Image (tube, rainbow, N blue to C red; front, side, top):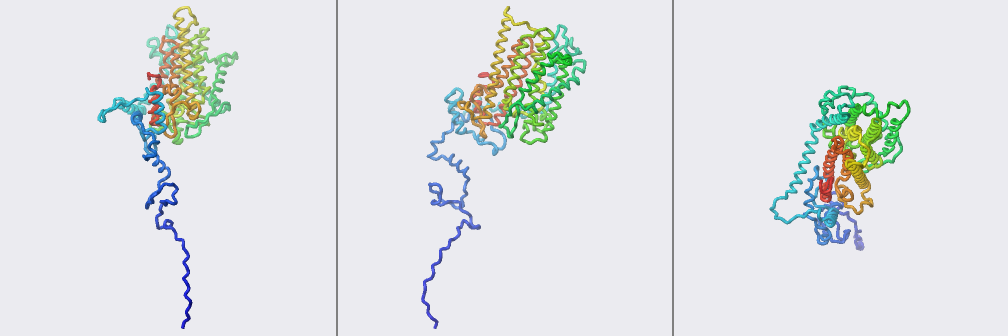
Length: 595
């Protein structure tokens, strides 16, 4: 018999740790947490196959949720004011996914609502109130007028200003206009209507049209004039590129780091020294190199050399822009049409040979303009033995304007023309002919000798009062021009500067802000207002006996009015609702309560 063994208790099975079902590859992972392991104290109900939302979306949903606890903390939007502000300009064009939320939504943000409340408290007259009306009432005419005005402006800018026909007409008409003004300015020298150039074909009969056609072709083309213009620009290039004097300024608002050495004041002082040596030197080698003798004789030749140089430089800038990146390309100069791109310029900030050319070409233009004024002063001294007080006053105004530009050269880096406009024929030609177009007042006054300042008759008293008023007007305009430009440059570089603490600022997309206080809360373009005041002060100094002293103010008015339209169009596309709010806060563009 088999032996019986004692029955022994079965050993207890050791507890095996089973793998979690969520760890297996074949099973789906559950993202829900149990209440015991949840991070928040609130009870979480587990759901099967739920998808966890990102943290950024959960925060946004909690902020936008209309819970009873957070409903009192979120301010309710002001429907009437936001509706008015949102319809001031149309929505920015382009893909909605690439636009910020401030542009896509018509409701202002919390920061914008605080600004609106501050505006309503401090300036209640500027905030339009919406009257109660029935839902079926027609739309107000003011809103329809604003929308139609924006549509007309968009159509004019996209279809008319970018038209190749308009560009070709501007090129054809602008160049002869500059020639005609410089030739006609010297006709009323004597009673016989003699011209400082060769006698024209129809000069004695039709001085208006005959001044445009001198019979001698050497009046236009002169190899010495081409050499002088090339030498003048080469010297300024060497001074700007290799002189180590001057501090460097970085334009941090651009997409890339751009350094510029502000040594324009050194070039300005050296140019004045060279002019003084050439004019008053007693060396026999410089006897026939006096600027007061050479300028009236070779004025048209220098103008022709400048025009040809502008065309060549514009072509160089156009073909050189084919190898640049898209970041540096001007959108208005990248249309694919040669004439439009040649006129507007494809490059926004071209840098060749280690030099910022948009800032560089302003130096020879401004310095050359002042040297032409000084040449007219010396020419009148050589001819009459004294200088007219009107000519001295206008030259002193131009001297202060040019000196101010070079002293505060760093602030010009933040201007609209430098940051957003392209380097095309419009910009290059305008700067190259500046010494011949902006000096029409001094060129006309050099042929007219006024008497000294006396107080004998009523006419003399009126003239002295005109001198004093024009001088005061120029100084006030220079103060407004410089203070507003410096304020804008400081705000773009340091928006959190202590000087802007008590000023109104309007939030925009991509952490951008618009300054609605200081000079920029007075009018929307105070720098243009100061520039026009200085220009009209020079015309008022010469009086109203001729139209020639007023050509420069009228020409500058046309340019700045177009610049205002371009600036506001660009700012509206960039800031969206912020620009609409800025228009409500500062309703005047240029002149308070007038325009």
